[in-house]
Image (cartoon, rainbow, N blue to C red; front, side, top):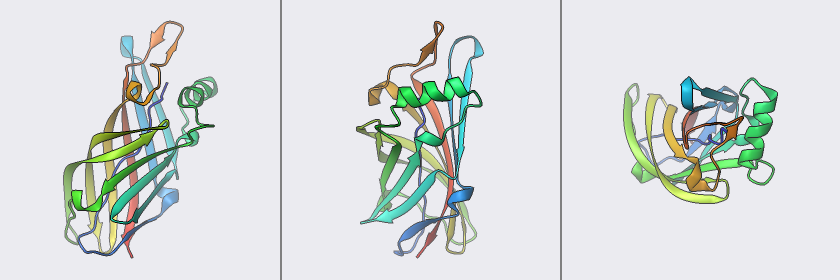
Length: 179
């Protein structure tokens, strides 16, 4: 079900050539929304699960899929089974730093980019949107993307004849700092 989730998103910024590294991981968060017929809405949330760093000119955002909580234990178990989190515990988005826009100190910006999402053992290019608020050397980032879980080898989750749509909406918030 929520197989979704994936992921993670996004990106961050920094205008200078200084490398970026994640800070405040405990304050990071991610959520997903899987929708189905008749107003079915399944929301999963996780805190402290986003790891964002830069390596070789790529921003790498890693999300721990094992930590999502939908508020219903049975549903959480179904989610972890569908995502096969024992085999694939993380989703990872890689974005070339050069593909990202960076606000000046004290400024905000919204933009879109494309990155390489590794999820459920498969890697696909995916578009996402992001917002960045820069305060000194810190970048407060929020990102959104829509993941078609079937493209990553995950069947549309169904229970008692109700199936969620294959497109799952994912949001991520985190902070990074220039080194």
